[in-house]
Length: 167
Length: 167
Image (cartoon, rainbow over all chains, first blue to last red; front, side, top):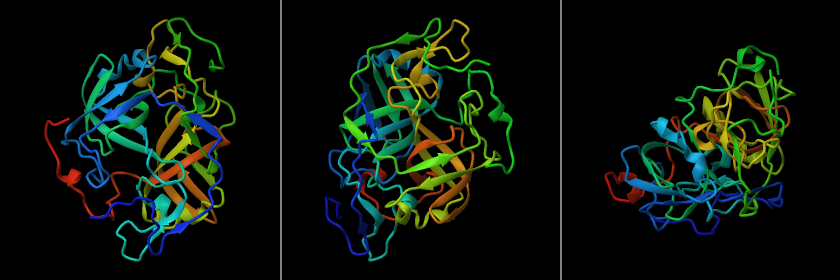
């Protein structure tokens, strides 16, 4: 098995990426998983996978209130070891490549990972879940209810009723 | 109808947020929608909603190759007008509040929006989709195939087969 460190494979294409300073992120927690090397991590998480512990940092622990209502949650994290300059990638390293946006590879201009996970429990700022696929120590960016389980509490607005062709 | 500008509502809680400089984002495009004010935007997008145009900037247009294979795609964007310091919010402004992570409100420590959209077409760096819920001019951060339609091209790793209780 071969792990991507920083090499470029045959048929991959890198660009000179613009500076990544259009907006700034704050790491709001850290994700604990069983995977300490990139040759171990799942390509895709599974809802019957091992329980992982998401540690939420102060002052954001208070923001967890109510999350326990949802069986599944969306986790957004920062793929901190990924290069950001490839526009074509060769996941199978077989001489064929595809555009980065047609893949769920961690290598992307903004290395944002998203997973839908099964909630196991929330205790003292620790959110236990199944279904992650990231390295131990991955920085946490956001938690939200799964979109398919969430109904807005705010009153509807005109756009909620809009259908059709306009653009 | 009331739009949140920068007020704090009864029962909402703000914190002194740490500096948002742990990682930097690059805006890779701009999203065109019919909604030019926050009192119009849908609370949630709908797959039969109006066609919206996602403009991808160079040098990232080449990264779109292959995305046309997927009927639905995940769009990640930057909710550029949102405050970032609320840990409890009152979406209905009724004196009751819940933690930010139990809501899909745009107001969050890292204002990252995610939607699953229906792909209409890709032409010349413009990705046309239905199902968005964001303001006209919203900065684009990432595009990925819908996770439920995507099979990894890279060979499996040990984590792909791991189930159970370990943490």
